[in-house]
Length: 233
Image (cartoon, rainbow, N blue to C red):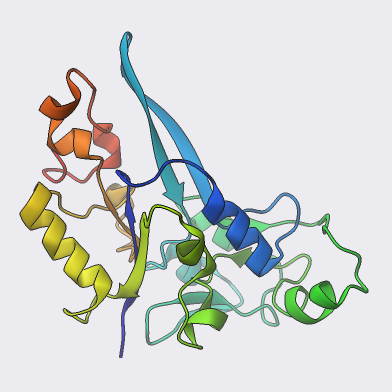
């Protein structure tokens, strides 16, 4: 069985938010819900300051606190590692929202939808998967993955900053990329908020400036709290 994961190369991300828009279009999320966000971090000290873009989404953790915290057992992990919320079982308790250390689970009591309820897209594509007063989050576009397709955010990324695939397959694109980057740039994958201990499948590669600072003069490396101890330095 595959073990799906998302790798994000921070060197390649240009902060264009194509992933954010693609996710919203694919999932039809309400106006105030974004499964795929891009954080902006300003690092360094004047005058040597630069901006780092950090895409975030559900990490589909191996030890998912949202799953353990749900009182209604509405959250489950598939054999391939994708963590999903059963909209029928969810009672909107919100425990999963509090349990997620990454802030990537959403619960809205009043949604503002972009389209009218009688629109075919809303009726047939969105509402069956995203119910009001229920918790929702990124699903790695499981409905696409089950058809052999990449998540919408991966397809939309113009710089190939996102790579999705099977980490248990040494020949998969994501596995080969990890090996190649360690050999060529010395970068090793790391997790956000490693102290949470959730064993996330979402992994990151630090900016090239963090690996080869001489190439960018006095540019500062990525903040230490965004890397795991002893990793991308």
